[in-house]
Length: 281
View 1 (spheres, rainbow, N blue to C red):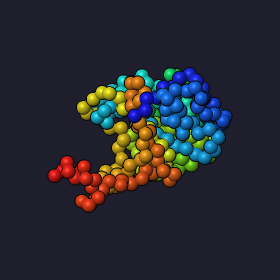
View 2 (cartoon, rainbow, N blue to C red; view 1 turned 90 degrees about the vertical axis):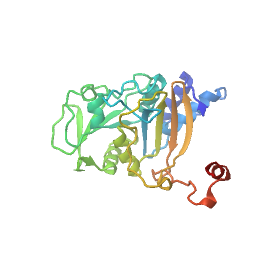
View 3 (cartoon, rainbow, N blue to C red; view 1 turned 135 degrees about the vertical axis):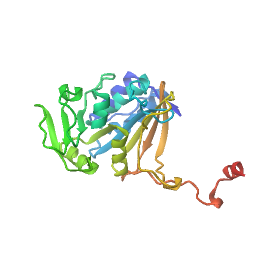
View 4 (cartoon, one colour; view 1 turned 60 degrees about the vertical axis):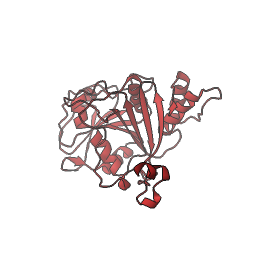
Protein backbone atom coordinates (compact mmCIF):
# COMPACT_ATOMS: atom_id res chain seq x y z
CA UNK A 1 0.00 0.00 0.00
CA UNK A 2 1.27 3.47 -0.88
CA UNK A 3 0.57 6.31 1.50
CA UNK A 4 -0.90 9.28 -0.39
CA UNK A 5 -0.86 12.93 0.65
CA UNK A 6 -2.93 15.48 -1.25
CA UNK A 7 -1.13 18.72 -0.51
CA UNK A 8 -2.21 22.10 -1.81
CA UNK A 9 0.41 21.88 -4.56
CA UNK A 10 -0.73 18.43 -5.65
CA UNK A 11 -4.37 19.45 -5.75
CA UNK A 12 -3.77 22.66 -7.71
CA UNK A 13 -1.73 20.65 -10.22
CA UNK A 14 -4.55 18.11 -10.56
CA UNK A 15 -7.12 20.87 -11.08
CA UNK A 16 -4.90 22.30 -13.80
CA UNK A 17 -4.71 18.88 -15.43
CA UNK A 18 -8.49 18.68 -15.19
CA UNK A 19 -8.75 21.91 -17.20
CA UNK A 20 -6.46 20.58 -19.94
CA UNK A 21 -3.13 22.07 -18.89
CA UNK A 22 0.02 20.02 -19.34
CA UNK A 23 0.82 19.16 -15.76
CA UNK A 24 3.09 16.61 -14.10
CA UNK A 25 4.47 15.93 -10.62
CA UNK A 26 7.05 18.46 -9.45
CA UNK A 27 10.68 17.33 -9.05
CA UNK A 28 10.58 18.07 -5.33
CA UNK A 29 7.40 16.13 -4.62
CA UNK A 30 7.55 13.52 -1.88
CA UNK A 31 6.70 9.86 -2.45
CA UNK A 32 3.31 10.42 -0.80
CA UNK A 33 2.55 13.36 -3.10
CA UNK A 34 3.46 11.28 -6.16
CA UNK A 35 1.18 8.53 -4.89
CA UNK A 36 -1.67 11.03 -4.67
CA UNK A 37 -0.97 12.07 -8.26
CA UNK A 38 -1.09 8.45 -9.42
CA UNK A 39 -4.43 7.98 -7.65
CA UNK A 40 -6.20 11.02 -9.09
CA UNK A 41 -4.51 11.82 -12.42
CA UNK A 42 -6.34 9.09 -14.37
CA UNK A 43 -9.75 10.51 -13.46
CA UNK A 44 -8.60 14.12 -13.95
CA UNK A 45 -7.96 13.20 -17.56
CA UNK A 46 -6.23 16.30 -18.80
CA UNK A 47 -6.52 16.84 -22.54
CA UNK A 48 -8.06 13.40 -23.19
CA UNK A 49 -11.34 14.22 -25.00
CA UNK A 50 -12.77 10.72 -24.73
CA UNK A 51 -15.60 9.76 -22.38
CA UNK A 52 -14.55 8.47 -18.98
CA UNK A 53 -17.04 7.01 -16.50
CA UNK A 54 -15.83 6.10 -13.04
CA UNK A 55 -17.47 5.11 -9.77
CA UNK A 56 -16.70 5.54 -6.08
CA UNK A 57 -18.12 3.68 -3.11
CA UNK A 58 -17.22 4.14 0.56
CA UNK A 59 -17.81 1.22 2.90
CA UNK A 60 -16.83 -0.43 6.18
CA UNK A 61 -14.33 -3.27 6.56
CA UNK A 62 -17.21 -5.75 6.37
CA UNK A 63 -18.50 -4.21 3.16
CA UNK A 64 -21.46 -2.22 4.53
CA UNK A 65 -22.46 1.29 3.48
CA UNK A 66 -25.06 1.88 6.21
CA UNK A 67 -26.66 0.28 9.24
CA UNK A 68 -29.86 -1.74 9.04
CA UNK A 69 -31.78 1.41 10.03
CA UNK A 70 -30.18 3.33 7.14
CA UNK A 71 -27.67 5.46 9.05
CA UNK A 72 -24.85 6.16 6.56
CA UNK A 73 -23.62 9.53 7.78
CA UNK A 74 -20.21 8.48 9.14
CA UNK A 75 -19.19 5.39 7.18
CA UNK A 76 -16.21 7.15 5.62
CA UNK A 77 -13.63 8.95 7.73
CA UNK A 78 -12.64 12.56 7.11
CA UNK A 79 -10.12 11.73 4.39
CA UNK A 80 -12.55 9.29 2.81
CA UNK A 81 -15.10 12.09 2.57
CA UNK A 82 -12.49 14.44 1.13
CA UNK A 83 -11.63 11.73 -1.41
CA UNK A 84 -15.26 11.61 -2.54
CA UNK A 85 -15.33 15.39 -2.92
CA UNK A 86 -12.10 15.30 -4.93
CA UNK A 87 -13.70 12.75 -7.26
CA UNK A 88 -16.68 15.09 -7.68
CA UNK A 89 -14.43 18.07 -8.36
CA UNK A 90 -12.62 16.19 -11.13
CA UNK A 91 -15.88 15.17 -12.85
CA UNK A 92 -18.19 17.01 -15.24
CA UNK A 93 -21.20 15.37 -13.64
CA UNK A 94 -22.10 13.11 -10.72
CA UNK A 95 -24.85 10.49 -11.03
CA UNK A 96 -26.93 8.96 -8.24
CA UNK A 97 -30.04 6.80 -8.14
CA UNK A 98 -33.28 8.02 -6.65
CA UNK A 99 -33.10 5.65 -3.67
CA UNK A 100 -29.80 7.21 -2.62
CA UNK A 101 -31.27 10.68 -3.14
CA UNK A 102 -34.29 9.85 -0.97
CA UNK A 103 -32.34 8.06 1.77
CA UNK A 104 -29.36 10.42 2.14
CA UNK A 105 -30.56 13.75 0.70
CA UNK A 106 -27.00 14.46 -0.53
CA UNK A 107 -25.92 17.89 -1.72
CA UNK A 108 -23.38 16.52 -4.24
CA UNK A 109 -21.10 19.53 -3.73
CA UNK A 110 -17.31 19.82 -3.36
CA UNK A 111 -17.48 21.81 -0.14
CA UNK A 112 -14.56 19.93 1.46
CA UNK A 113 -12.06 20.73 -1.31
CA UNK A 114 -11.36 23.66 -3.67
CA UNK A 115 -13.03 23.18 -7.04
CA UNK A 116 -16.26 23.63 -8.91
CA UNK A 117 -19.46 21.70 -8.27
CA UNK A 118 -20.28 19.08 -10.92
CA UNK A 119 -23.58 18.83 -12.74
CA UNK A 120 -25.99 16.81 -10.57
CA UNK A 121 -27.82 13.94 -12.24
CA UNK A 122 -30.56 11.90 -10.55
CA UNK A 123 -31.93 8.69 -12.05
CA UNK A 124 -35.62 8.74 -11.13
CA UNK A 125 -37.64 6.48 -13.46
CA UNK A 126 -40.95 6.89 -11.61
CA UNK A 127 -40.55 10.55 -10.69
CA UNK A 128 -40.42 9.92 -6.94
CA UNK A 129 -37.90 12.60 -5.93
CA UNK A 130 -39.69 15.64 -4.46
CA UNK A 131 -38.89 19.01 -5.97
CA UNK A 132 -37.87 20.23 -2.50
CA UNK A 133 -34.92 17.82 -2.35
CA UNK A 134 -31.71 19.65 -1.53
CA UNK A 135 -29.85 18.68 -4.67
CA UNK A 136 -32.69 20.10 -6.81
CA UNK A 137 -33.43 23.24 -4.81
CA UNK A 138 -29.77 24.29 -4.59
CA UNK A 139 -29.03 26.11 -7.85
CA UNK A 140 -25.25 26.32 -7.37
CA UNK A 141 -24.83 23.71 -10.14
CA UNK A 142 -26.82 22.57 -13.15
CA UNK A 143 -29.36 19.87 -12.24
CA UNK A 144 -30.68 17.04 -14.39
CA UNK A 145 -33.38 14.49 -13.63
CA UNK A 146 -33.56 11.46 -15.91
CA UNK A 147 -37.01 9.92 -15.67
CA UNK A 148 -39.52 7.78 -17.56
CA UNK A 149 -42.69 9.63 -16.64
CA UNK A 150 -44.03 12.99 -17.93
CA UNK A 151 -43.49 14.88 -14.69
CA UNK A 152 -42.65 18.57 -14.72
CA UNK A 153 -39.74 19.83 -12.67
CA UNK A 154 -38.93 23.30 -11.26
CA UNK A 155 -37.46 25.97 -13.51
CA UNK A 156 -33.75 25.44 -13.99
CA UNK A 157 -33.94 21.65 -13.63
CA UNK A 158 -33.40 19.87 -16.93
CA UNK A 159 -35.51 16.79 -17.59
CA UNK A 160 -34.35 13.91 -19.79
CA UNK A 161 -36.99 11.31 -20.55
CA UNK A 162 -35.84 7.75 -21.21
CA UNK A 163 -37.81 4.50 -21.29
CA UNK A 164 -37.40 2.04 -18.42
CA UNK A 165 -37.97 -1.64 -17.93
CA UNK A 166 -39.17 -2.75 -14.51
CA UNK A 167 -38.25 0.73 -13.27
CA UNK A 168 -34.65 0.45 -14.52
CA UNK A 169 -33.30 2.65 -17.31
CA UNK A 170 -30.69 1.38 -19.72
CA UNK A 171 -27.27 2.60 -18.49
CA UNK A 172 -26.01 2.89 -22.05
CA UNK A 173 -28.91 5.21 -22.91
CA UNK A 174 -28.09 7.27 -19.81
CA UNK A 175 -24.45 7.45 -20.86
CA UNK A 176 -25.35 8.54 -24.39
CA UNK A 177 -27.70 11.25 -23.10
CA UNK A 178 -24.97 12.70 -20.87
CA UNK A 179 -22.35 12.56 -23.61
CA UNK A 180 -24.75 14.39 -25.95
CA UNK A 181 -24.75 17.25 -23.42
CA UNK A 182 -20.97 17.45 -23.29
CA UNK A 183 -20.68 15.63 -19.96
CA UNK A 184 -17.76 13.34 -20.71
CA UNK A 185 -16.10 12.67 -17.37
CA UNK A 186 -18.82 11.27 -15.14
CA UNK A 187 -18.73 10.02 -11.55
CA UNK A 188 -21.31 7.32 -10.81
CA UNK A 189 -21.56 7.80 -7.06
CA UNK A 190 -24.30 5.45 -5.99
CA UNK A 191 -25.93 3.65 -4.66
CA UNK A 192 -24.49 0.19 -5.03
CA UNK A 193 -27.19 -0.99 -7.41
CA UNK A 194 -26.70 1.97 -9.75
CA UNK A 195 -22.94 1.40 -9.81
CA UNK A 196 -23.52 -2.32 -10.48
CA UNK A 197 -25.75 -1.52 -13.46
CA UNK A 198 -22.99 0.54 -15.09
CA UNK A 199 -20.31 -2.00 -14.17
CA UNK A 200 -22.22 -4.97 -15.56
CA UNK A 201 -23.03 -3.03 -18.73
CA UNK A 202 -19.29 -2.60 -19.30
CA UNK A 203 -19.46 1.19 -19.04
CA UNK A 204 -17.06 1.91 -16.17
CA UNK A 205 -13.43 2.79 -16.81
CA UNK A 206 -12.44 2.90 -13.15
CA UNK A 207 -13.78 2.03 -9.72
CA UNK A 208 -12.62 3.44 -6.38
CA UNK A 209 -13.57 1.47 -3.27
CA UNK A 210 -12.89 3.34 -0.04
CA UNK A 211 -12.70 1.21 3.11
CA UNK A 212 -13.02 2.78 6.55
CA UNK A 213 -11.81 1.00 9.71
CA UNK A 214 -15.16 0.14 11.26
CA UNK A 215 -17.32 -2.98 11.44
CA UNK A 216 -21.07 -2.43 11.12
CA UNK A 217 -22.24 -6.03 11.28
CA UNK A 218 -25.31 -5.80 9.06
CA UNK A 219 -26.86 -3.46 6.53
CA UNK A 220 -26.72 -2.82 2.79
CA UNK A 221 -23.54 -3.74 0.95
CA UNK A 222 -21.45 -1.39 -1.16
CA UNK A 223 -21.83 -3.22 -4.46
CA UNK A 224 -24.71 -5.50 -5.40
CA UNK A 225 -23.72 -7.19 -8.65
CA UNK A 226 -25.26 -10.33 -10.09
CA UNK A 227 -24.19 -13.47 -8.22
CA UNK A 228 -21.77 -16.00 -9.73
CA UNK A 229 -21.34 -19.74 -9.16
CA UNK A 230 -17.55 -20.02 -9.32
CA UNK A 231 -14.67 -17.73 -8.44
CA UNK A 232 -13.30 -18.30 -11.94
CA UNK A 233 -16.23 -16.15 -13.14
CA UNK A 234 -15.28 -13.23 -10.90
CA UNK A 235 -14.12 -9.88 -12.21
CA UNK A 236 -10.57 -9.14 -11.07
CA UNK A 237 -9.62 -5.56 -11.96
CA UNK A 238 -6.02 -4.41 -11.93
CA UNK A 239 -5.83 -2.76 -8.53
CA UNK A 240 -3.53 -0.41 -6.62
CA UNK A 241 -4.00 0.38 -2.93
CA UNK A 242 -3.52 3.81 -1.34
CA UNK A 243 -3.66 4.97 2.27
CA UNK A 244 -5.43 8.27 2.95
CA UNK A 245 -4.93 8.56 6.71
CA UNK A 246 -8.47 7.63 7.84
CA UNK A 247 -9.40 5.39 4.90
CA UNK A 248 -7.86 2.95 2.41
CA UNK A 249 -8.65 3.37 -1.30
CA UNK A 250 -8.67 0.43 -3.70
CA UNK A 251 -8.09 1.95 -7.15
CA UNK A 252 -9.51 -0.56 -9.63
CA UNK A 253 -8.63 0.04 -13.29
CA UNK A 254 -10.98 -1.61 -15.76
CA UNK A 255 -9.98 -2.55 -19.27
CA UNK A 256 -10.79 -0.33 -22.30
CA UNK A 257 -14.13 -2.05 -22.90
CA UNK A 258 -15.20 -1.11 -19.39
CA UNK A 259 -15.11 -4.61 -17.89
CA UNK A 260 -12.51 -6.01 -15.54
CA UNK A 261 -10.58 -9.03 -16.69
CA UNK A 262 -12.08 -12.37 -15.75
CA UNK A 263 -10.47 -14.33 -12.95
CA UNK A 264 -7.21 -16.12 -13.68
CA UNK A 265 -7.31 -18.06 -10.42
CA UNK A 266 -6.18 -21.70 -10.98
CA UNK A 267 -9.04 -24.12 -11.61
CA UNK A 268 -7.11 -27.41 -11.83
CA UNK A 269 -4.92 -29.14 -9.28
CA UNK A 270 -1.89 -28.94 -11.56
CA UNK A 271 -2.17 -25.13 -11.71
CA UNK A 272 -2.40 -24.52 -7.97
CA UNK A 273 0.79 -22.81 -6.68
CA UNK A 274 2.87 -25.18 -4.51
CA UNK A 275 2.59 -23.05 -1.36
CA UNK A 276 -1.20 -22.99 -1.58
CA UNK A 277 -1.39 -26.70 -2.43
CA UNK A 278 0.72 -27.48 0.63
CA UNK A 279 -1.58 -25.41 2.88
CA UNK A 280 -4.53 -27.47 1.68
CA UNK A 281 -2.89 -30.81 2.30
